[in-house]
Amino acid sequence: MPEVTIRYFAAARAAAGESTATARASSVKELVGAVSADRPELARVLGICSFMVDGERVDLDTHLHEGALIDALPPFAGG
Image 1 (tube, rainbow, N blue to C red):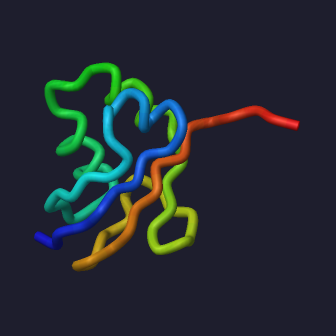
Image 2: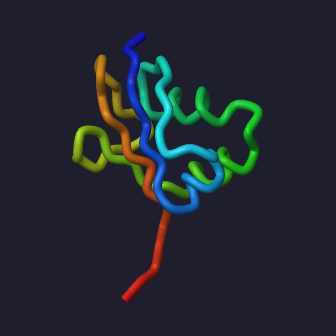
């Protein structure tokens, strides 16, 4: 399984208590499960996030490659 880095933003960062993490996962869905195991608030926030892999928007079934950079982007409002 590839080792990847996930970056958390806004509410995801608050729920994770950190700005980045590394994990081994072969898909975005697997990564979400790995980083949120035993962390229900993080799991809740990641459940409403959009994800980008190396700067491109992806879905949960997207396969990951070694060294991929995944951004977890919760919904946000602004003006």
